[in-house]
Image (cartoon, rainbow over all chains, first blue to last red; front, side):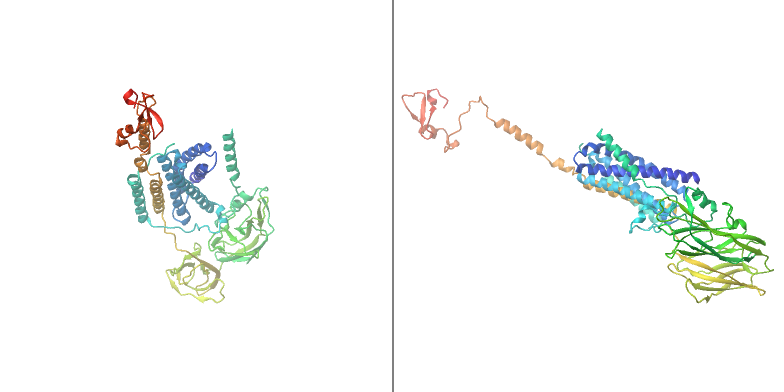
Length: 192
Length: 390
């Protein structure tokens, strides 16, 4: 148990750091096209966002596993349940950003629509990590930096759909992803 | 060099953006804790300071062994953090560890927050005074013992990040032998902290040496007590019907244990109201989490397909082919400098009317045998019959 807690603290630090780096780099890569000379840094920002996003995936999964071991009642209360949900959302945004970069190449940031979509994924990653950290702060310290916001949602409540409905949603999600990949418009890499 | 400066600036901003860390400013929650817990984090003289709070304990100086005992504490202070949170320990010694009252034979039936912990955290009201009550079972054997209260809290502003510690004077208690067959609570019974909202199931109370009990109840803040109906559930076990509560209502109840020889009025106890139990499970959370991930991915892939530059636009775009064809045509039509092509017909003369009309208007002069005069254009042209081009 103690090892899990220590390991969870370690891996959460890595996820937070790399996730923030990936998110900020992604958003800056998109914004760079609006500034004179931004193209000089876009290549660096693109690579940092791409590599750090790939690194976030295993770390995030390890963080979930270690958090499950460290918690006395994982998923049995609203706080830990919310951590699972936001981990899933964050993972979804990370994978989406990687897929976008992989399908369309490094010029994806300069395309007006795809670049905005990639930046949206990056913002989703940052929001997810912020909420996850905030819930963690609530659980361990009893407070979080997000307490200053008057509209911050209560972490003591969660949306529970039930195990079987969750399984149905999972199958639906996988099917939707496969259909989008196989039957959607064929992606072509953008010209460098 | 510029890249290095840029990278250095980014790293510097990220380092500066990290927030300063405090230990547990939001508290750690109610629990059974030794003073060492407060002392280890706040015990270093560099990290703590003496609290100016006034701690007053109000309790009997005598108790019967194994019977309920009420310990009241009143704390007043003006020095609190912005959250106004205060942590309060009920201790049986000042050793720093092994000082939980249970270590000296006491058993906590209920703390001031409705639980059964020796350490509770409470928000101090704006008047700066807070009153706490512990209901305990006295040690089983007669002895002279003591209880005390230790507090810790913050301050606002707290420029030096100090924790403020304070401790009450020990409250001496003489635990005497109980009369034979004295009725009271069972030694292993703990009062429940709360019930689910709307729950009407009876409350189980376990006693010892009791043949009957009587229970009075009232809502917190009320002054009139009501009698509860009771059903026996075996020896020294009683099911008490208390009304269901909603919202954050707290119910107070007092049990009187009797056995024909004695009637013992126990301290008032409190039971709170909590929301319905959480229905989530680990596998439910995992499934819902991955479902969310896949749905986000599916949605984003679909959006990528919709927003990508239209691949068919390239198939339909023949601009390059048209431009190449135009260039080819232009190169073919461009007149060659060396070509011996006839000059364009003069204006006003249709090309398809032939050369006949043109030749008829030309005038031949003897003086110039190789030339003809064009009166329309007023120019000399070569005579084709004399070996000229035209």
